[in-house]
Length: 380
Image: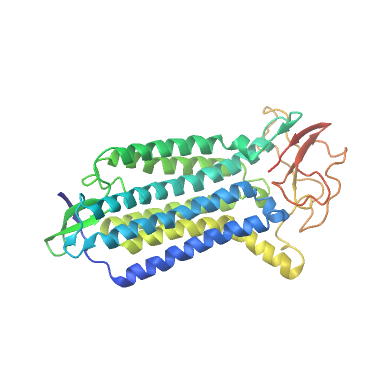
């Protein structure tokens, strides 16, 4: 039996807390699945295509994992108490709860990592286009910039496998001292945080996973700052920065509260906010733009569409010694909303970078970079 000290009453969770948690989880799942359907249905619309649908799909998948993880975690809390008290670890039900704990921890960490690494690859693709010398016949596909995703996910999965296969059951029955009443209470739960070292024999692995998340966040912030001058409809750098900072603050607040009051509702709110805020920062604005265009026949005046659905970036430096920076200067013609720009393939448009991740090109081949006859294609 493990002994821990907490200042909260974990032995009882009010039915209304479970009810609210279920509603929040269902809402988060509906939001993420609905966002995926939106991207799929409107993927050929320029305002959506510029967001690079390949990455938006994976972003929705990552946002779907935290609420599902909390569903497993909540199930463990709910079913850990049987008719005869706390379910023991070595019982048949305890084995099932151990499996649920494994799912909960796997999904929550993978959810965080998928969200941030997908955004990392999304930014990296834009940087690859705008900050490198042009080369004839170079195709910049999403798979060309997915190596950070594969690398980080592989590392995460390896750590999770090590966590699952070492130590004892991930479903833990522990006795804790309630400092409010000075009484000992036995509880069953999933120790998913590295701070729970007294009840988790593999807390070191959880600590490595927990540390990996802010490292990826930091890399994402750095890259987002580097593309901050690129068209926001294309780069989403400000939205990505806002998302990372917002989630960092929310996660810190919820984690701090959970250490003193480990209620299921706190964990649920944290997971749901992470999921819904990801959709809200990155995909919801494009939903609004599509709705606005449907209602008014054009996009909001604040939205700058360059090249009629593709983005043209001129003046890409051929070397880094020329004060390259982002190598981006505004084109001479900016097309707002959905005006056609039929000059994207004109031979006079030298040093033009056109970025569009699959979408209606109005009869033009917008998915390329032209440089005095040299073409670098960007395809979805």
